Length: 188
Image 1 (cartoon, helix red, strand yellow):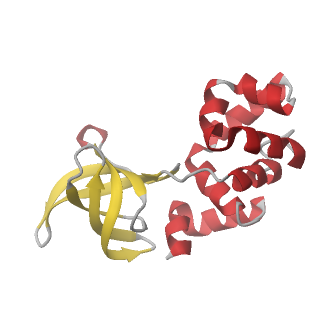
Image 2: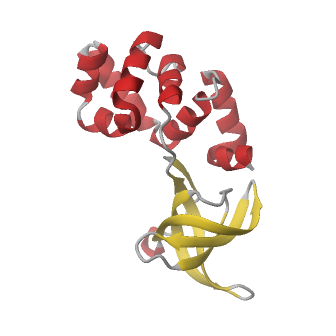
Image 3: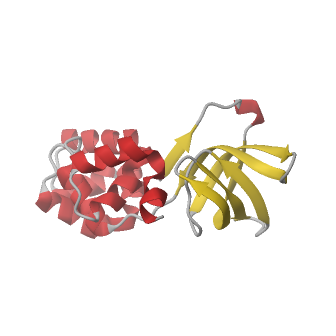
């Protein structure tokens, strides 16, 4: 899950989940367009300080406003993007990120191939299953679980970038330079 947000008033915050269907304007720091809401299928206007692409599945946080020119729209202050976990990317990410101490290429391959897209859920809810499969000690799996949860906002972006064979250092530089909208910028 990729997340980006700015400070906002928590008591007036709303959430909007859906798929970006149309962009009227996009830059690395701002997007405006239409989002098809998951629950109702309605096409709604949105704008926010982030880059997205048509087809992206996102969760926006913000508030409903009325723009003097564009009318009623969801003014987003934050965005979380669901990215599929790529098995090869997960393998490379776990093997090359120094935060995941104790996982080398062989153990990363076992974990990625056995758990794949379900790794996030399993490491959070049943870390002992991962420990058994990869032959990790209790201390190692506790560290890996803690570090994975701590990096929740960038894990899927990092695994997506890792699928291209990038090193941990390269991924860190891209995320630092482009922020959590790196996928939209790089694909755009």
